[in-house]
Image (cartoon, rainbow, N blue to C red; front, side):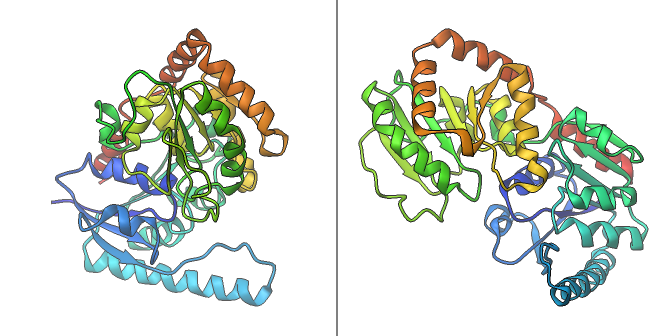
Amino acid sequence: MARLLIAASGTGGHVFPALGVAEKLPDYEIQWLGTPDRLEQTLIGDRYSFHPISVEGFQTRSPIKRLQILLGLVSSVFEVKKLIEQEKIDVVFTTGGYIASPAILAAKLSGIPAILHESNYIPGKVTKLLSRFCTTVALGFEGTKKYLPNTSTIWVSTPVRSQFYTPQPLDLNIPVNVPLITVIGGSQGAVSVNQLVRQCIPSWLEIGAYVVHLTGKNDPDADSFKHPQYISLPFFDNMAGLLQRANLAVSRAGSGTLTELAITKTPAILIPYPFAAEDHQSFNAEVFVKAGAAYCYQQKELTDKKLNNLVLDLLKNSNKLKEMSQKSSELAVMDSAEKLANLIKDSI
């Protein structure tokens, strides 16, 4: 039995695609590399053996702190190399982020293949720095290739979990024939988006819409608005069922979320996270805007009045929503996880 080490940590954008690939490799012995007390521990449960390591990014101006982080990285590389040797790992797969650095470098030192999936249109710093040590870099957006000119790349889109491909029941008390708006701030939530949306919700409810608002766990005002047609949750595991049912999404523009919107054919109003590295969410969103699948507004320019009026206009224009839904579906790649799983198989 082949042995795979998956390094995916931190946010849903890193963890969910990795889970999608893992589901396509039932005949592999899979170990999971992550960081303590993050999303991945909750999501993988007892499905895979979990190995926590401590690793940080270099976002600090302190020379002392940078040195500490560098020494920690070196230590974690050898920690992962030891794990590779002990578990007889055949191949490493990572979805980027800080956890990718020790995983890729340890794979290189161990002489085994490393496959990296870069889901964002603008590749992250780790991808730019370490892609040369990877067997292949799989891309979430076709246009990303131009940013990695000296790297072996292949476009596969971004995997999603298997439940997105089949109809899922939505276990929420929402009538069948009412319009449903879902608000998604990403796996970490988005307090500023939440505040904006709460100013608009009364108008949306007034025309009969229901709203499912995923607030994240860091919003102090998450419970400040109550209404029978408004459902506020910090997190919801059945995203497939929610997006399949939704008529419209108001969302950040993380690559994983965009892929889920495409698979479920969900029209969207995108509000890119303004502090994302190299503004990559804006570049992600632009692909959907150009395709006619979404509207996009920068957070600083979007007022509650603009958002309110746009949502109301779209809900009153079923033909426009139908057109956006069709355009969204045209962006979907239905076999992304299979393509990545085959890359992993072929690398050994």
